[in-house]
Image (tube, rainbow, N blue to C red; front, side):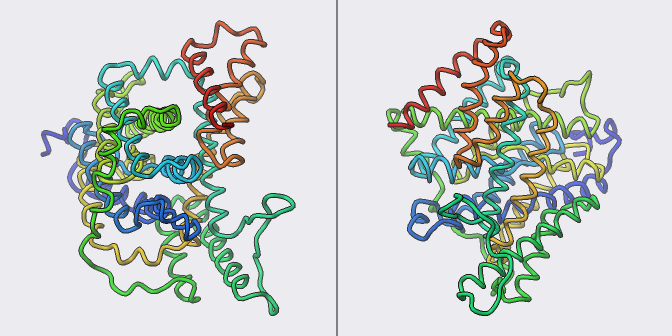
Length: 456
């Protein structure tokens, strides 16, 4: 094992790798609660929840997808990078594909499968670099930042900090309570305050550079919620993993129906899954490897194997019953703890398997408990706003619209489409038409058709 993972070459040992693997797991363990919460539509009205997979099955799919993806990265990519269903991609799955477009969740899983298959082919053939180079950096950063704002908005809404308002569309929710209020208003205000408490605690932990800050913040919020009677106490700690039957292989019938799978609506869905995972995975792999000192001449050695591992993880996740599985930037926590080899990922993957037997603890997961995680992750993703060239209007405007339209239209796809339509136009009138890659002109017409379809 030491020889396979090149411990001597990387200057590491079992103790350091094990500590790093545990650290990475704790840093991203929140996904075991948040992903089932999002994909099952737990925050949506009762009548809508029937259109989503059951919470328990998604939990099992999440843990297994994370374990498989991380172990594949360990033995194929040989990197200290863990994988799990991606934040942002799960929101797109739930709130855009299923809720807004009305696509069955089983069909959406088929879309994930196809996008990951394409990603795998692109990774193995080396086409990835050409596509990445065709899309301007400003739109890549804007996409990540926009998803961050969208996720944060969902967290604020779920917690009741932001509520609907007939006059202004949205408004500040009840953050105080007093006699004379309706019981449901008092409960809503208490939950909103619990979420605010969780946000503050998590922000403090992150600012103090505490490893697993998001996970610890959720635990503290849940404990405080139980103390004040806002969160139910779990009835047990251990149990057999919930059944995977409701979600396992649910995508297969739709994979056989090509007319439905490759309709104009599904093509946009598949492209968005592919686009977001494509750049998120690439950025994460390079960023984590850079921190670990694994880059050579600014490039990631055996990048094809690492990206292929990411794609394989996504394929496994879609079969199990979860949205796109991808590399996690929280892996930097393990790298900071000394992780340098794929053995770090072996430890993290095994811990995800162990977590399967702790599903009863998920009864403490409420909107107020998950909201801080969604909002803090949103903040971290929105940091990419600083990298956009705001002094160049021809790129600033499409980037701004990409970011703005995601939360305002409640659709990641609409935000991406807006930016990709506006960018060629602003560049042409700036006299920089030749600087726009031909691929961007193709995408311009594809997304134009997308908006025309939405109006029908």
